[in-house]
Image (cartoon, rainbow, N blue to C red):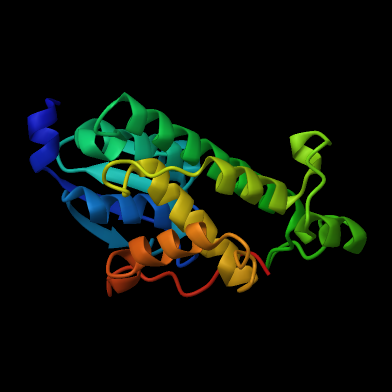
Length: 218
């Protein structure tokens, strides 16, 4: 399917009523200018077997492909709307690195943070260490805890020309998730807090058709 046809197609993003892997693609679609709709699965037990890789989020393109996996969806949006990938090489590299670091944070959350379906993943001491600050930056990255990632992000943080690339959409979604768990988590990272609030307001959070009401983490 040619890019011009893809740019004029209608997109349908399906995800659960959760703030997890769906909001970043939804935010990217909102910023992209592509025609789209955002929906919840009607009966996931019946739809699961038909979904690519049997998981959500899932992006269906009118007359075109169906894509699963959050990062694949984000990169596809960047392929169809080049400005979302980055206006130039610098923007592209910034966007990709922010996206990858944000995914590292999400992976750590799934390892340590209790969820509605699994209450005890690690010991209380390990969970407290994960959220504690300041981080020990001399140990391996996987042992630094959440604030190791946030400090590295704060040290690195650059914006792209638009400030709304796919990597930044992933970043804003991830940081908002952290704030839903702990409202004070970004207090010492002012630039990240301001950027997150500015780019979420009026886009994903303003969409009456797709407002995740809860999170899977506790």
